[in-house]
Length: 210
Image 1: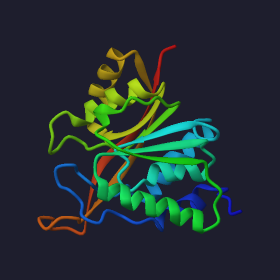
Image 2 (image 1 turned 180 degrees about the vertical axis):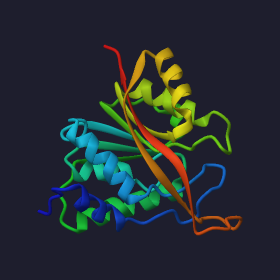
Image 3 (image 1 turned 90 degrees about the vertical axis):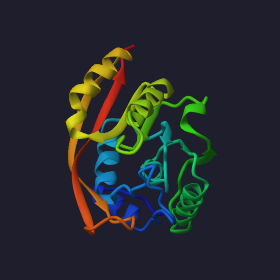
Image 4 (image 1 turned 135 degrees about the vertical axis):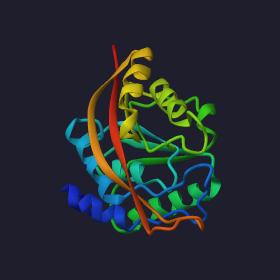
């Protein structure tokens, strides 16, 4: 069986995954960059938050974060999204890594609005909409993630740090780690004028108080 043993190996595996067939503007469906995704998942792995864990990928899109977790030994991942087309791509991507000889844990696909999710997990990985189209949707995703698991990895605009500190504090959680990136938003829609637009985005690790 094939096995991932490095961050670069993980990035290579993730770079071969399919993107969105018909990305939706309102849902801010941008593909998570494979290098950035691999960096965050590898850091989570080193912190003991991946191997053997039950993980939820909320607003999973095409499944990159959850698949990365499975490749590094997650016990199981639930992939949650309300977009059936995105989930079709996620299913194909899961099948792809299996066909390449990787032994992975259980993958469960759930077509549902995140707000209706009743499942619990040990870890949440998510790259939610940043709230540029639907106001405060990023905070909603974080709130749901903190209801779902005691440890959450979530991407947000870097400038949101102060707000996220206050918000998570109100939910009995705190930020333990921050990883900063120049997040590439690749041209996906007709109104885009540049091939790649980079924004300052960070992945925040939240942990609820026991």
